[in-house]
Structures are given as structure tokens and as C-alpha cells.
Length: 329
Image 1 (cartoon, helix red, strand yellow):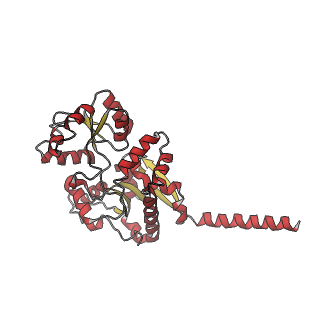
Image 2 (spheres, one colour):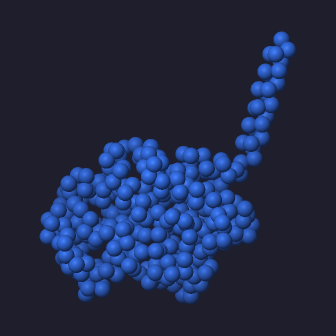
Image 3 (cartoon, helix red, strand yellow):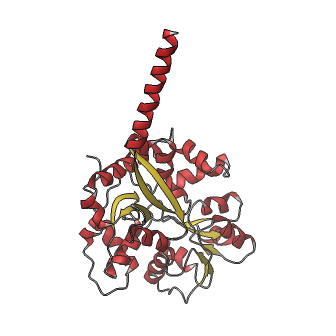
């Protein structure tokens, strides 16, 4: 009987202890753009219990489009958002501030993928010849005036082409299946889709990568502030400890993600509808763009500005658009 009372007492203390730990968790609200492969560190953090490790409980919302993600951060409906630094600059040019605190990817999320006919004809040619091969072609892109279109415009302009004008743009959104369907139906000749769409096209035998932006082939799109964890500037002074914890979570998650012994398996769990081969290929492609240390840079910000050229009446102070002060030392 005495032993039974001791066991019950121990169980009660264990329950109280667990409840105390649970109640000590601080909720952090995070917005993520869709369910893209690029957000790997978020999935790792959720699956590996990294938020809980740092005393946090993550409330994650998935939204369609960077504009919505930006709005949730700017209006403080959430504490943090995973969105492109392009939105940070576009807002700054309009006098609206949010700030990036962790660099998830330091390169773009897409390559220029073409049908098999174009690939076989131009794969071994110079960058100039490969871009000129798109003259008169139908090119799929996620959205009008989006980053893919902007990058294509930079490359086209370098070799005397105009976008739009010298090629027809077809807007297909961010869903990978839309690009597979468009290639199958011969609606487009080329595209700049978010991965894993490029991998899926290759798996289906519909196309290949002609210009590899994600492996750093083009200097303009290397070492960027690109997909970032952002927050409202007020958060930096109101709750710096929360910012520090979130940065620590993403830093640890990024290291796990980039570990070839752990990262691919976690991503395979997150994307169970992809075949093992597709996941292996997608991981190989996207792991090139995940930042190894999460650092943002003035040079990386200026490179984004150079191709983005955001419209607005406000001069951008780049040093107010990002900070590395909360990264783990």
C-alpha cells in the first residue's frame, strides 16, 4: 500500500512537472508561404522538436503568396514570416518596414527549365546562346512581375531581349503540377518554376534545366538575401529574447537539414507523396541554396535591389532591412 502511494505521488509530481514545462512554453506565431521545399528548416524544427527545446510552441500558418505573408508580419497578426527579401525591399521603397533576421536561402528558388527539344539543341552553348534560345518562346512563371520574371528580364536584357515582348509569358502559379500539365499539353516551351517542379519535369521526361540559377552559375543571383525569416521592427526591442530564440531554432534546423545523413530523410517524411528518387533529386537541387549560417549581407541586399528595382518614393536604408545581431554566436 505504501509503495502504491509512493508511485501515485511520483506520477502526480511528474504530471505537475510536465504541466509546468508546457505552460512555460511561449507561443510564437509564424506564417509560411505555401508548403514549398525551400522552407526545409521550418519542417525540421517542427519535426525535431527544436521550438520546444528553446521554450517555444510554434503556431504555424500556411498562406498562398508572399504579399499575404508580408501583410501578416507588417500588421503583426503573426510574430514572424518566411518570405522573400524582395518583399522587404518592396515595402521599404513604399515606406513600410519589416526586417529580416535569418537568411534561409542565399540563391533563387528556381532554374530556367526547357522542353527536351530546346535542351538538346542548346545545353552545351554559352549563357548568351541559351538565353537567346528563348526568343519567341512561351515561358511559364509563377506570377506577373514576380522574382522569376524579374530575373529573366535581367538576363534577357543583357543579351538584347525584352521581357515581355521577345517572349510570351504564361502565369501558372507556384504549384508544381501546373508546370507538369503545361509541358504535357504543349502550352509552354520553358519555365521558371519553384522546385520541386523542375525535378518533377525531369522525372516525367518532359524537360531539363537549361540555365541553373540555383547552383550559382549566374553571378547576379549568387550570395543574395533571398528567402528570409522576417519580423516587425518593433519586435527587436519589445521581445529581443524571442527573436534570439527563433533565430537559434532556425540555425540549428538549418544545420540538421544540410546534414546529408539526416536532411533527406526528414524532407522525405515532410513530402510523402514524392518518390524516394524525386526527393533525393529535389534535396540535391535545393540544398545548394540553403544558407549555411543564416547570415544576411549588405552586398546580398544590393544585388536583390539591382534586379528587383522596387518602385516607391522612399530611399531604402539597407541596414534597416536586415540584422545579424540575433544569430547564435
